[in-house]
Image (cartoon, rainbow over all chains, first blue to last red; front, side, top):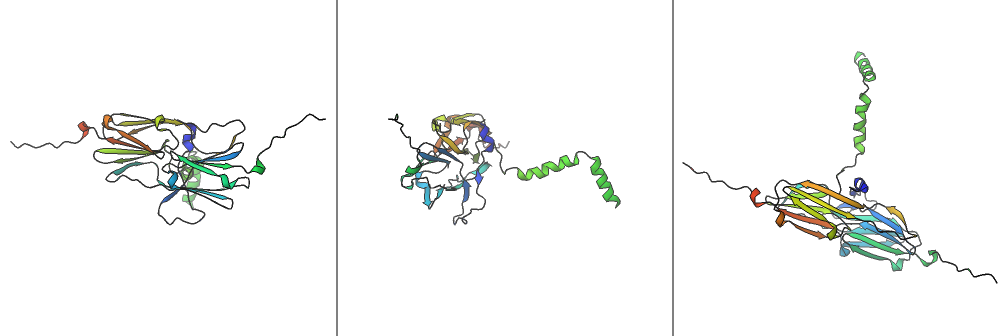
Length: 135
Length: 143
């Protein structure tokens, strides 16, 4: 089994910092990989049960909030036999540094994985400086 | 006074006393659910079992489901995003690697009629009960 398997448990968000939800759903914190590439920063979040219609991404000042809605889909007429995980919405909040070009942020969802590409602002990209032989 | 002394005395004599106290303290820090990955939910009716599990980012073709008797086995894997040169992780929380999960259901399964759907990263497997396993009504003949 994967060595990461032991640490993978669905992390339930304990007391949401920005107030409770009005809907009576559970709230989970999705696990996230953040990769810095040459020209952009990529945020990949595991949100099973979410498709592109059910994701809200908001950027206010420099706070990025990702929210994924999951519908319950509990089978009717069946009894719960084993329950190892809960079902609920996903929410995570990040504070961005100024280096992101807000206009060009892109997001996509595939198989329950949200991928956000945050292009670095021009001023921050390292520019290669060509060196000419001195005269 | 006498009882207190005996207790104190007893504790000094008992090398296992502290050892026994430790698990009680530690058990408060055990996370609420430590199950083998992936976590599953199982719903059961008289004739069918439904198993759901969350496998985000895994390709449907990479999930291996096999059924034998009452046992369901799930296998699969997921690779992380490959990094190019010059790229680096700021955070790495998502799981990756291979997983195998075995589960015993309360009845034998009709393996030919098992259906699996993979939607939005959630795998739904419906497992009908084997015909031979279904309870049969037995009529009582009176002599």
